[in-house]
Image 1: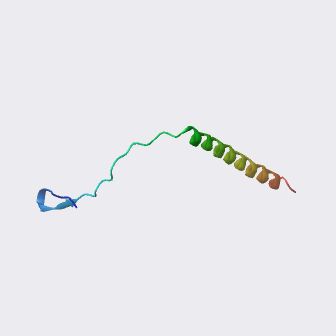
Image 2 (image 1 turned 90 degrees about the vertical axis):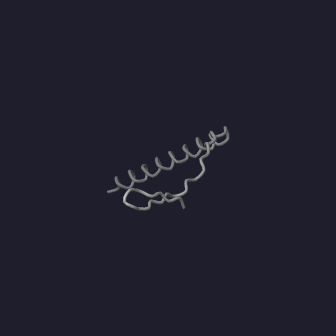
Length: 59
């Protein structure tokens, strides 16, 4: 580990930094999959809200 001597004789150690890399943009297939999963998630949340409303109106 790299140590640095500071004023007053204190040692300060730093973590080893990970290598940096560039993120790759999503492909057309990945974009399509994200859109499908988003639509399914919206339908799921809408269904949960509909069920909650239906249950809350039962007397």
